[in-house]
Each structure stands twice: as C-alpha cells, then as structure tokens.
Length: 142
Figure 1 (cartoon, rainbow, N blue to C red):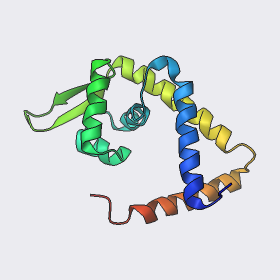
Figure 2: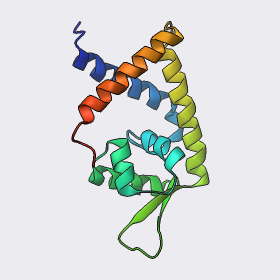
Figure 3: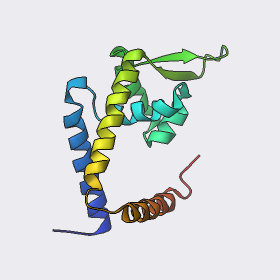
C-alpha cells in the first residue's frame, strides 16, 4: 500500500465522502451539496462567488448544484438591494434541517477519524493540516 501524503489525502477524502453520503442517504443529497449546506450554516445569505470560493467549487459547478438544491427546496436565491447581477443564497427551513443533519454526520465522521488520538495529538494534527492547507492555497485565493 502507498502511504505517500498525496495518496493518503486522496484516499481519506474518498472514504470520508463515501461514508458521509451513506450517513445522509435518506436526504437525497448529491456530492457537493453537503459542503454547500455546511458553508451556509455560518454564511447564510452569501453571494455565489463567496460560496464557490469557500467550498472550493468552480462557479459553473456551483450554479448546477444550486439549481438542483433550489428545485429540491433546500435553498433560495434572492437579489439584494435591487442588484440584478448578484444573487444571494439563503437556506430554506428544509435546507436548515438538512444542514443540521450534515453537521451531525460531519461530527460523527470526525470523531471516528480521531478515535485513539489524544487531545494533544488532535490539536497538533489540526495545526499541521492547517499549515499544509495554507501552503497549498498560496496565490489561489481571490
């Protein structure tokens, strides 16, 4: 088995996403939608550019995901201050309920992932991972 950094990151991401969708199976969410709901929990009413940036999703992909989420009654897009060029995304009551289920599933998966690690190890791991994240984001944020 390959234990290189890139392999472990890709493998963990795939396994995490698969387990997340299994936990959320009854909600009918597709790949990409849970992280949008997660983002909107703390940024409800965000602009589409901000959501795309915050979720690391291409704007075209985000539009497709939001269209489907709007059709399913999870979000609604509204113009603000009469600006017809910018829409802001708000969760509906149904979206808020599903966002809560997403948050619970994320918490369960994180607890499973950190099982057997001390609080100190968990803190160190997160600090290092944040540094790695920032290193990979250099020059990519708008």
